[in-house]
Image (cartoon, rainbow, N blue to C red; front, side, top):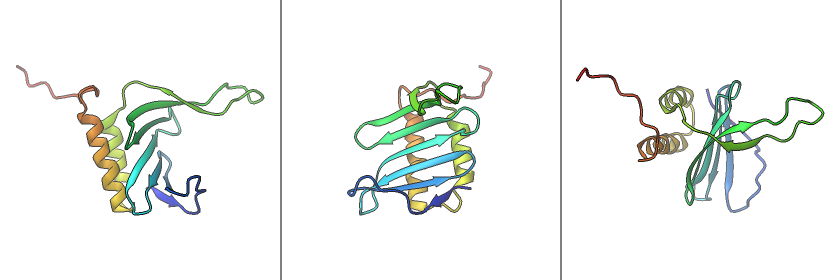
Length: 134
């Protein structure tokens, strides 16, 4: 269940950054003072193969995996985002829906709609459709 982290460090005085997390997701949201979402990062599958779907009002969508750097403790670099392929959209949407029961409904509905928009893009990987036998 996603819970909001309070007292998030605010880097930009013109935007409010919010952070919601659970064992599977981190959701970072940037809002205008009037509450309009202008950017978010939905990080998922944190414990196995962390990936992130980014959405920005100006730039649109980007999908990345998190490269945590070298496995050696003495030379480990900061994690970075690198381009990644297919997002398992149906599974992420199902988990997101189940994890957001107590989330701010305005934020939940906004992110869920952007996930639908991501799946509807012409260049997005198409969702598997059942074989109709014909």
